[in-house]
Length: 346
Image 1: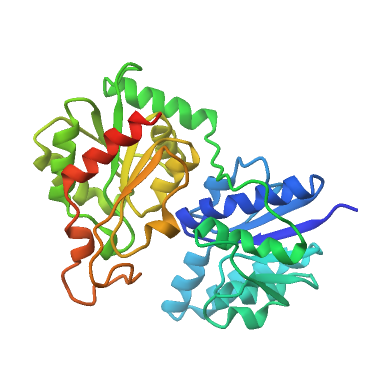
Image 2: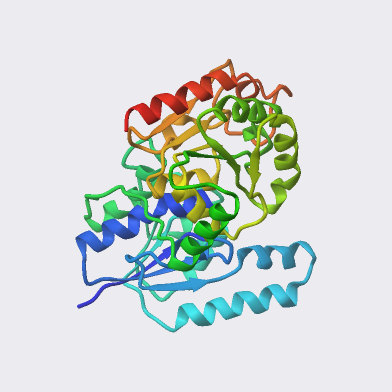
C-alpha cells in the first residue's frame, strides 16, 4: 500500500533547502511513497521541480501573520479555513513537522493522520502537539532535520540537498550573462551581501574590498533580494572595479540559475548560499553569530571564514555587546584566501 506523507516546512529559503534530504531519504527507503510538501509562497519555487516531491501545498504564512498583526481576523480565519479544507481532503500515514513552531504544530493537528513526528528540541510548545518527537542525527542542520525519520525506522542513505533549476530560468541566466559580457571563459564570482539578520551582515565596505581583490581573476556579480538594493549600490560604488549588480533584478529561480553558473559564491549565512551549495557551486561563507559546524555546507568545495570571540555563536539577531565583533573582525584577505584555496581543491 502506498504511503502518503506530509512534510511541513513553510520557510525560510535556507531551511527549505536543508530539508530536501528528508524527501530524498524517504524516496530511497520507500520508493512508492507519495510526498506532499506544505510550503509558503516565497519558498515554493525552491521545491517545485524537486523529483522527490509529488505534490506541493502552498499556504502563505506571511499573509496569515500579516493579517493577524493588522487585527484583520476575518481574513486570517479565511486563510486558516482554506488550509483546513485542503488538509481534510486526504488521509496521511505520517506528518513530519520540520518547522517546529506552535503554528506548524497546530497545522499538523489539522491533518488527518494518527502519526505526527516533530523535532525534540522544537520551540513554542511544538513537541506537545506531536505524537512522537525525534533527536537530531548529528550537529549539522541537515542531520537535525533528518532526525524526524528515526521514528519511522529509516536510516538516511543520502544527505544531498536538491535544487532543480528549470530551463526557463537557465535561459534567463544565459541571456543576462551575455548582455553583461560574461563569456564561458570568464570565471564568475557571485557575492551575496545581505542576510535576514543584522548580526550576520558583513559590512559593505569589506565586501567592496573583497570584490576589488578578486577582480584581477574574476568577473564580479552581486545577487540578492530587493531589500538589499541599497547595500548592493554601496558595494558597487566602493569596489573600485567593474561590478555587475543583479540585486533585486531576478526571481528566486533566476538567481539560482546565475548561482549555478558561478565559479564561486561568497556570502554570509543566508538562503542563496545554500541554494548555491545545493547546485554544487563552490562557496565561501562569512560566519558571525551562527556556528560553522552547524551550517557550513558539506564537501571540499565549500569553505568558511570565522573569527571566534568571547561570545561567538550566540545565534542572536541583535548583538548583546553592540559591536558585532564576530562578523566585523573578519578580514577581506582571509575571505579571498579561502576563495583561492577552495578552487584549488577542485
